[in-house]
Length: 130
Image 1 (cartoon, rainbow, N blue to C red):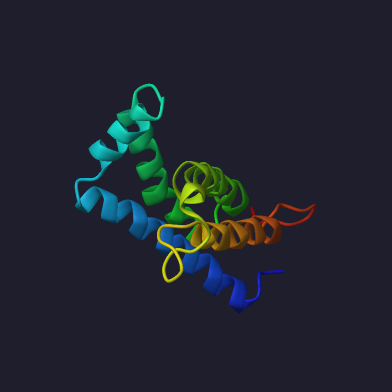
Image 2: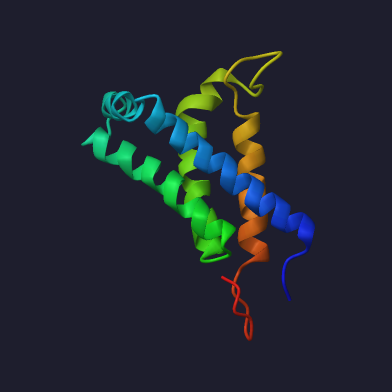
């Protein structure tokens, strides 16, 4: 049984938001600075990590939109977002704008959406969705 149209809208919308995040980083020349920041945080070979995250943000959304490997790809994004939330957004508090700046509320919302999508698309016996 396919997911309801409302969930399809969330799946496509979240995938596009994630894609735009990675595409903007590439377009703005932000991959190398991101890699340098990761190295400053203790990640070895930060540029490789930065390109890995960016590549995942550029490729995985296409598969999610096409309903291929949705659960595992969403969980991968949850891992990336959770780490980013702890390293970047949590120290800035809850709010993204208004009562704060660069907080974690948007990351929490994306994580909840991704977890819901992973659950809905989780393979079940006699079900070809993934």
